[in-house]
Length: 206
Image 1: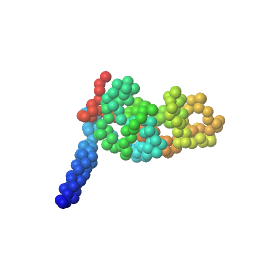
Image 2: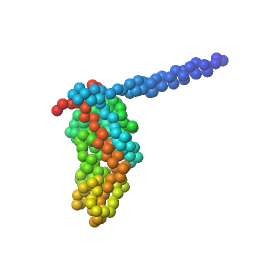
Image 3: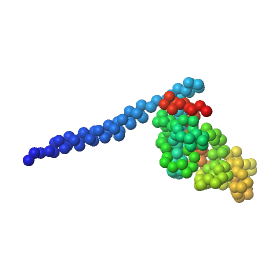
Image 4: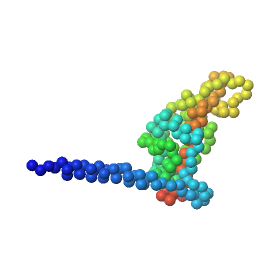
């Protein structure tokens, strides 16, 4: 009776190495060699690095499950073009500086790939986080009021106080101040901007 243990062992090792090559080494060569690209018009290197505040904000984004309802992966699709999400598809190089990649799976809310270029006002983002329906009527986005502090006004209003519409009821004599977490999250949202061109994914001219 022949001993087939050695050929079987060699077969197992072969398929293990083949799987490792296809699933680990090949993607590493593809994504691990990504480099910054010099924008031909501005001379800037893109994508741009995130500030320390924005990096902290990405953690807040992750902790609050924002990627459950929002994607950060623009596609070359009619939907994305009509909605104005992006003028090109997202590629691996776009996530060069991202602490984590929140590509997402569902679009219960809009794609956030370029929300920093679509909505450039920190004030807009703070109001949207505190009272989403005041800026997006019919939105199912929950309020993130726990990231804000209702503070009694002593003397003059704080320069950081949110300018909320009258439909948002705040106790008289109080104002709403963003926490450090809220500031970090807004900094992260403002950093989401892929409105530059890359060789593998050039901007689509309208």
